[in-house]
Image (cartoon, rainbow over all chains, first blue to last red; front, side, top):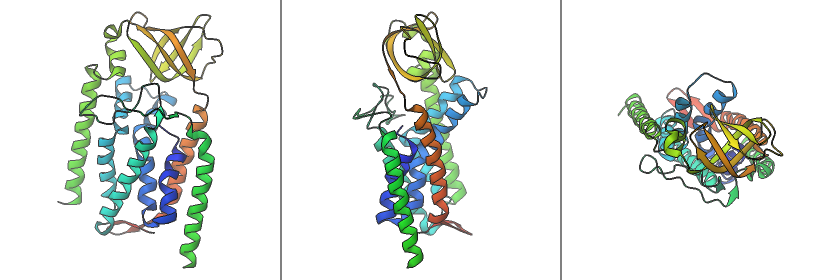
Length: 158
Length: 143
């Protein structure tokens, strides 16, 4: 996975500039795969929660496209009917951006199960290192912060 | 279809997908499952351990941890410290289990990446009050 700040910026920056209505769903969508599929697993390991490996690995499935479409659809149900479809599209766009960024990375062939349960093949393009975005993150984060601040200022003014 | 019924259908599909994954893991279709549950099937196979944590270092070997599984790696540990996260390429042997290292690569930015993970989650949460409104029938978009 790329770092979470870059993931967030990949959706929030363009949303703040050109599609402010979608800022919320894109913010959620871009972090959703890691928030559901990686963070719990890492936290369990970090805090030595006594779970068997088989249970820990089960979280991996949530960092895959099909379960994320289902998760995004579940999150969309929290939205009012009038905005649900737009929110769902924004959430899916965020999830797509997340996997688009992740798949660029190189994990020495240990890529992502993009087609599970249809196929257990792993995919990655290997164009950038798995930590390459760490150096980009401060700039992407600052640009996003500026864009969101500008959007909020514009909203208050107008 | 009501919101609750739709949520129920989505949850059933999600659980079904998790069950399919657990099945693939437990039958060894997924390499991590093979490594954990059927090490004999991996005997002599080349493998890559991705972003495993160095747990201890000895003279001509070191131990890495993937999830909660510990693996001994036979290779020169020069330059490795406990807590480092690395990629290891090598050949698997079921006795031990152990891996004969062919190559390895340090992932020195993993700590920063995890820190950015926390920051990213906090930033996403901080944006939501400005981007969404709560209404009686659910959240609405606020552009």
